Structures are given as structure tokens and as C-alpha cells.
Image 1 (tube, rainbow, N blue to C red):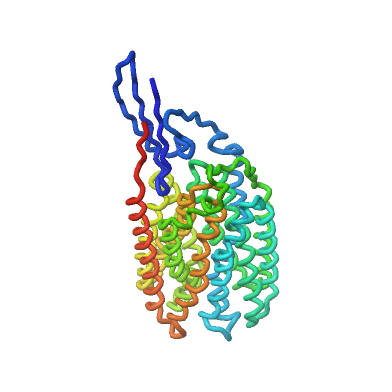
Image 2 (spheres, rainbow, N blue to C red):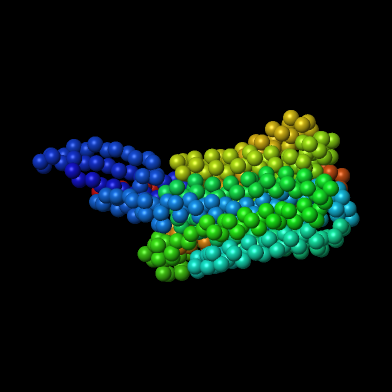
Length: 466
């Protein structure tokens, strides 16, 4: 029996195609068997006329246990940073109504936007350091800076905007950028076949952290504990999570990271920068990020202004993040089967159209339903963005740089998106204007990515080898 195995790595989908031809005593019959399960074939190494015998070390360079330990460690590290960042809706409400009374809601939104901008747009710094073999040191520095800034925030005085801006806006953002991309890059090096699922599980840190920190902060800063000690208690939680996380991380040696044969040429290594699909995905990410954070930042204030009870409004952000835990995991699991780009397109469409539903959230039931559905698809689009970028990056050795470049436009959109939307809402709180603007941006993101997928389908054909 002669076995021919053809491996084809489709950047949106992974296909493994195995065909068996039996030649008993000079005669031949063809009996094709098609295996469409990507986890059964290492598509990057399969060639015609070879049979792959996959072992644990083929799939996991350092072994399965160390791979998933790294996922959990990176999860804890990112949760300690993303949790407070994605709980900014709590800070937005608290600052607007009491702690920063001299400043408008739009001005306060700049604090949350700057932390996102720095955390995302400077991702190329962490990405390049990670690619150069300094991933662990970079993440340690980021965790230390973020935790220090968190404790400094607890010392901020009422109505002192600059103190909060420096510690929360600048400090949080710079610390976040040093842990965000390196952790994804380090995790991606541990996986060959189930990368989207692993990255989705890692990305679930942010909604999980958002649930914990939003509830914790609301309960502490609105109680006798007060702002100062409420922030310190949260900072101690971040410190503990980051310490445990760093102890669980294992680094794949650079010699074990797959590289393309032509990777030595810088012009070929950065070839993804000339890929129209990659560039359109960056545009899609930019447009989507303009609108996606508006509901998250403003939902608690929206609920308060619509006379919802504090027992509900204080948990609006948490409800979004609870739904987001499933939104980060389930679509990424499907992405391993059906393709990261396809899953991203579907979730982006739902996120945009559901955004318009915030117009009808004048009741408690409507608010809860909106938070559940929007939280699910908001987090799914966020978590699927980097797996799409990973699928569009030919050389794993360039993964950190590719991730860093990809989050740059997203970071810029994070900087300007919510303040622009807040300015559109205005002092009179014309919610319909901001909701419409944000939702239109999200729908535009879906349209651009769908067009990118169309171009990619036209360009790519399945190679036939014999």
C-alpha cells in the first residue's frame, strides 16, 4: 500500500487531506478517504509521499503539561491586568458622579481610552522583545509596573484628574502592553494544532477578571471601605495572581520554534505586511474597536441614568463579562474546526447588530438581556482577532511582531473611540446618537472582514500533489 498524505494549511481553515491508493500486485484501485479534522495532521510539515507519526512532543514542544501550565500562568498574569482595565465602567460611573465632579464624562473616558491605547498600540514593543527571547523578562517588568501603578492609584485625591490619569491611564497602559502580546506569543509557541482553543482559553482571562474586579470594586469603593483601601485590596489581588502566574510559565527554546526556510531574509519574514487579507483585517479591527468599548464603558452610567436600582446597575458590567467567558471559549473552539476568520466574521456581525439593541434597554429585563448577548459577542470578537492574525502569519518566528503590529490600529481606535462616542452623547446624554455611531462602526468592521475573506478565497486554491 502506498500512502500519500497532503497537508495544506489554509490560513482561515486547517485541512488535512489523506488519500490511500492500494496497488495489489500491479493493479490499482483508488479509495480516497478525506480527513477534515485539523488536529490529526501537522499541516506545516506534511509533504507528498510521507506519513506523519505524531507524538506528544510533535504537537507540544515541551510536553502537554507544560503547554497547558503556560496557558494557565499567562491567564493569571493577564487577568491581573485586564480585569481592572475592563472594569473601567465602574470607574467611569464613580468618577463621573462623585470622585471627579469637575470633569465631564467624555473627559473621564480619556483615562480608560489611554490605558487601552498604550496597552494595545505599543504591543509591537513587547512582541519584538518576545521574539528576541526576552518574553519572561518583559512580562515580569510589565506585571511589576502594573501592580505599582495600581497601588499608586489608591493614593489619588478627589478631583485630582492628573493623579488618576498618570497612574491609571499611563501606568496601567504601559504595564499592560508588556504582558499582553508576549503572553500570547509564548502560548502560541507551545501549540501546533489547537492554537485557537489555547489562545481562546487565555483570552477568557479578561471577562473572568472583569467579573471579579467589577464586583469587588463596586462593593468596596461604594462602602465604608472607600476608594483608597478598595483600590489597595484589588491591587493585592493583582499582585498575588501575577506572582502565581509567572511561576507556572514555561518558555519554549528559540531553537524549537518552527521557522520557514527563508526566514533569514527580513524582507521575506515580514511578507505578511504585503498580504491584502492581513491589511484588511487590521482595518476591520480598527473599525470594530472604535465602537465595541462604548457599551462596556457606559453601561453602568446608562443604567443609573435610566433609574435602575443599584443592585442591578452595579452588576451590569459583571453580567457582560460572565457572558464573555463563554464568548471567549466557545467561538475559539469552533474556530479550530471551521476557521478563525469565519468565526470572527460571524461574531462581528452579531456584535454590531446587537449593539443597536441598547436603544431599547430602558427596563431591567432589557438591560440584562442586552448585557448577556452583547457581552458574549463583544468578547468573542476580541478573542478571535489574534487567532485570525496568527493564521495569516506564515512564520511562527514572526508571531510576536505580527501580533504587535496588528494591535497597533486597535490601540489607536481604543484611544479615540470611546471619547468620540462620549462627545457624541454629550452632556445632555443623547444615548441614541452614541449607540448608533458605535454600532455602525461595528457593522462596518464585519463588512470589511467579509470582503477580506472573499479576496482570500479567490486567491487561494488547494494544491494537488501526486
